[in-house]
Image (cartoon, rainbow, N blue to C red; front, side, top):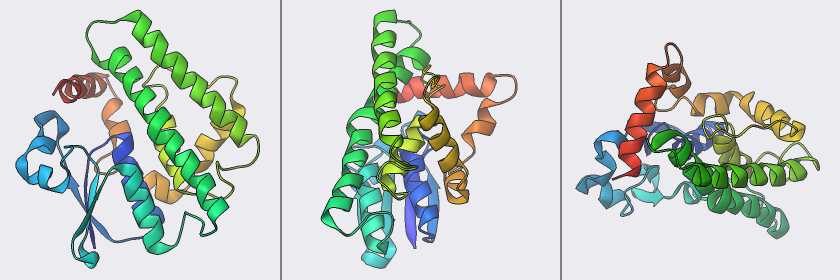
Length: 228
């Protein structure tokens, strides 16, 4: 059994999706980021950086892993799936995983802060991050022209990037003119395990529907997170 400490964010979904894809038994512990639960002493014992997701592998002497990319690699290596064994294949997957960790995630995160969360709209900052996100999407588009997935077969690289890219509208970035990226988003979304994973610990898409108050509340809660 694996304990998953997570929230409804792209990084949190990465851990849930890989657990679902690998069919590993896990128990979810929802962390309320708006209340600062990730900064409490008990959580900092799991992750000194005070961020989700975190897993605790009960079958491996309670081994704890934090950082979403590290979680993906650990679980892929644990099961021998979603990460090739050969050096070149493994390197290709790791390159696109690092692309998400160092580029897509941080840039979309900053776009979210300036476009959605901060009450003061600083247009140069919004434009800067949205343009960089779009540039990164164009890099993905060129790679996906070579095949259905980023590194040949479906892998943790696709999981990591998809969990962020699928939220592009929230960042205010469109995918017009990127047919390969659009098809890839839909292709990964059609995987049952991926669909289940993005509903952990709850279905954020359902929260945002309706009269818009759910989205407004989420944005206000997110502002609390980024200013802590």
